[in-house]
Length: 315
Image: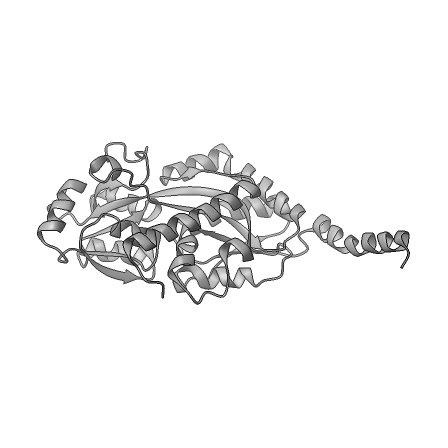
């Protein structure tokens, strides 16, 4: 093939991809949430979907595909066509899972394309009101005096699970499949404490059904300004948050990724949306695809160090 003919052939071969990106989307877009309804990931998806649907000109349908520690839904999206019609809300649970599970059929950093970070949710370290603990120092003292007697609940393998282990006291871990079930059992007194995401935990703290003794982020929450951080309460440097963002299958055209990132950032920066997320204890944090991709890789590496330090063996 002559050089000019070869160049022309390559240019023609690229036309379908360009047309696909220009015409996107051609049908409704599926936004998969790999965790149970009502949690932080689901909340973010419900805020994003209507605005994305309006800007894209096609419905964006939220679909909860929970199970497998948040990896069943993530695997589904990772193996979907790279055309932007199947998207994913994922974050720290999947980043943690890269070190906890050996048999995952996808790699978060390689098989998913980072679009934009969405929001960062600290958690509430909450106890049942009957537990005579009003601070992290009280909790640490009780845990050391009665090793293994305190029972806490969390989604197995989640940041909230590992965050409880980072407190450094011996407790009994009770695994759950959803944050809602953890909160329900804590309110009922079946477990004594838990690290709960703000969307699910804040209403119970405000009603007095649970007592907040600390927040898990690096700064106090505007929703609970009188509740200290774990770091300032006896565990220096402690910072465990849930973060979530938007992903697409790897190989999705850059023009589609860019459009989704820009539109999502506009939605998240809308004062009404920002205010509603802030009311749930979240910090809005949109970023470029490049920034988000770098952040994801850093988080996978950070949680790998935590898993090793705690001594949890990969399953």
